[in-house]
Image (cartoon, rainbow, N blue to C red):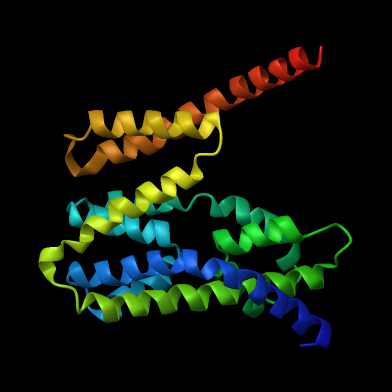
Length: 241
C-alpha cells in the first residue's frame, strides 16, 4: 500500500471511530440475546459474521423467539437488508476493476456507516483509488467494532440473570432505530401504516402479519412520496410568490 493509500485508509478509520459508541449498544444486545436464546458462542458469532447487519440479526432473533417459520425469518432478513442493493450500486464503479479476491471482501464489508461517510465525503475530483482506500478504512473499522461489541455482549450476557428478560431489549432497539430513521413525511407515513398493519394482523400464523406490514408499508411509502414532493414544491412556489 502506498503512503497516500495508507493516509486515505486511516482517514477512513479515524472518521468511523466517532460512530463506534452508536454501534456498541446494538452489538452488546446482539451478543447478550444470543446467549439468552440458548445459542452457543460459536453460533452467535457465526450468525454475526453471516449476516454482518445488526438490524437483520436482531430481526431474526425476534422471529426466532416467536417461533416463526425459517422461510419467514430469511425473507424478513432479506427485506431488512434490501437497502444494500442501493449501497452496492454506489460502490460498484470503485470495485469493478479490482481482482475478485480483493473485491468480495470489500463487498461483504459494506455497511450503513461506511456508506454514509463515503456518500458525504466523496467528490468528483477524488480518484477512484483515494475513494477505495477511504472506503476500506471505514469498512474495516466498522467490522472490527461490530464483531468486537458482539463478543463483549456474549461475555456480558453470561453474567446477566435470566429473570431480567434481556430479550425485551430487541424490540426496544428497533424502536430506537425506527425513531431515528423517520426524517420526513413519507417515512412517517410508512412507519405509521406498517405499525397499523402489523398490529391488526398480529393473529396471523407464522408472523405473516410482519411480512404484510413490510410490503404494505413500503408500497404506501412509494405511493405517497411523489404526492408529498409535489405538495412541498407547490408550497415553496406559493411562498416565493
